[in-house]
Length: 348
Image 1: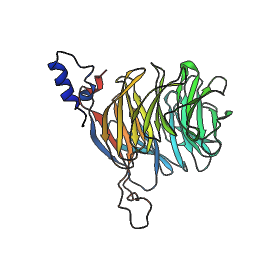
Image 2: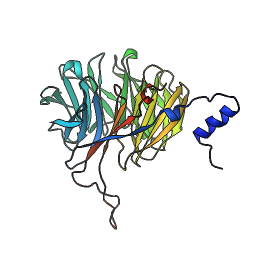
Image 3: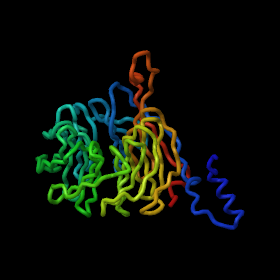
Image 4: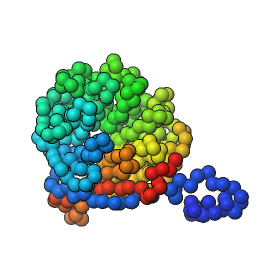
């Protein structure tokens, strides 16, 4: 038996004289609005938005590409970042920080000139990176060292190295609670770090989720959204460490985002889908749209000021005989921009 469509369900309930629980599925409709050509060969990883400066930072090959979000065009580059994974921005300090996986360093960059000020030694293969504004520190999460390097954002000095007990992936911060949260992919858990003491204070299993990569945060309701390798987005209560809900997503997830204005959580997947779910309540998550993107569009960020999401993508050629996977077409790298229909940004 096929499920009843959402519209049919509303009609049926109306005929019965009952109001539907919600009509959010008809309110949420993200669609492609722009393709920003980046070009150049090489892989890509994280994207990061600076809403105040109307800029998007995109890691690509050995550089970070800077996009003007008003004009939706490339306006600059941060170079000399071998094996770049992530970009963390500290607007009030006028600095950006990049995790350079191949040289085991973090670059400190002047946001005005996009020139490198200095580089800081980290553990092996720094991957995810974030700026924590309360203590004005940068956390670089080292994949092979299974640790976090903590750097004073003003002085560029390493202030702590925190063992994590497993391979870290993406991270988020609640500065008001002095907490940093990071996915430990190979342990299928979330680790909580005390950002005042620079020490791990909790290990939380994420079952039924497994091997989480992406992470987003809802600061108001104290929830984490975890993109898991077994095709689930898990909602975790970070006050208790308990799983509060989950929804199915696509295959090959790598990034998550959360929009506090709309209570929408996103999970971008390499199979060419982005799942959009609504946080109906702190213990209820409902899928409201499965957005068709393109194969390989697995990394993503959101601009909470405009509600637009940005995904890194490329064109692929068909796999030849004996080839394990399709190859990206040279110089086809781009950023896909998706926006909600008018009115959807005010959905509650």
